[in-house]
Length: 320
Image 1: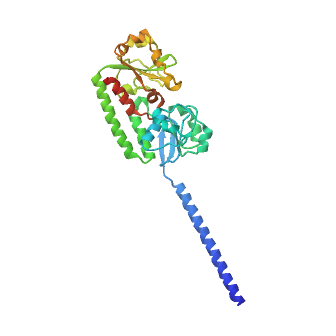
Image 2: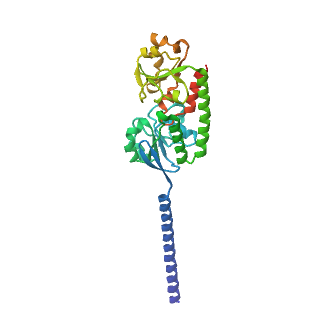
């Protein structure tokens, strides 16, 4: 009887060891499968102005540092996990002020510690964050995505198509681009029918700078079809410093104004800055054709700005 009992105990031990071995092999196989999944996760190689970045497809945690691209993502149904909330977020993106979205610093000063703690799958930047690119790409894949003023529409579409590839939204992006083409065509028709010229200026701290074709706000001419008042404006990010005498001499039919003080300092100052005899004597002022553009759209929204909203604003001004 004792031998039978010992034999049974032996059989039980063998079965127990076999089960443990099988379980261990299962766990090992599962771990190996998970590792293979991580290793074979699809990525895209994206070339951009600052380099080449391996971007994971459908990244879950995305940090976005420019409000134009944030708007583009939002329209595609893609929500960022972290944004630059220490700067003035445009009112049309006010939901990103909520606690559900991590504050990653300001447009010009990223909070590197918070970004590192967040461990995003992808970081998207534009012009204002260019200097931080090297440090950001050491934290996570970083993509510089911005439309080129010298070839605005082509570069804008390329940037949107890149977002479509990354987030598997190619069809949605194409629909948006088709709609945009219709909006731009309508805008150009309005500008052609209006037939008058325009000058776009930025008002900042009592000073004024002008922007022509191929510049930061050059889409007014290059994309929307408004005839430029002047052909001697140097294309640059910060515009060409001009005097009130310059505005009077060029005598624009329309004067389009971007008030930087309004979005940076919280107080509108452009109307007061331009309220002088020289500007008031222009055709634009005499015909009530001084147009104060929404600075949230034109100044804050870098990267891939909401062209449709900007076009509608200019179209309304030319039709009034």
